[in-house]
Length: 172
Image (cartoon, rainbow, N blue to C red):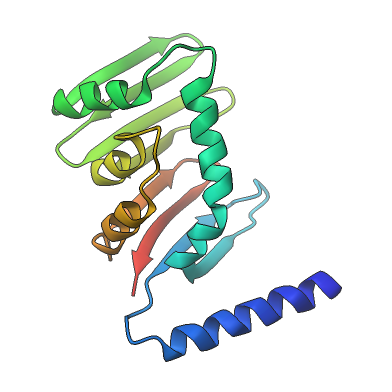
């Protein structure tokens, strides 16, 4: 109960601060249907600035990706994908399932269909990939925030599968 009160107080203060701000409030919105696999739904709208609170976790994940024992230069990999233009990078069609990874002019498209994941399609704007992956050693939060603000009304991520149907988008 105490945690809930602290959370409500923080959200109230954030609301007051946003109301006094002259700049429009950009919101990140999440709408997921069948989120828990048992007909559960998730709807959430939080200020885009809320993402700043996850900065340490994002830096930790990027450091893990960057410094892992996989030996992959994420920025170079992304540059190769970006510079290839619309391309189908991976297509697996086997008895255990199907996987496809490709890009078109605007999106990274991933499709998976197997025993665990039934007909999942994920669509991520290339501009968002660029902001997150072009310099894996340094996350440029102001650049990411500006790109996200420029994507008002566009879907950042869409998921369409038997298990989950949903999207993430920016509004103001």
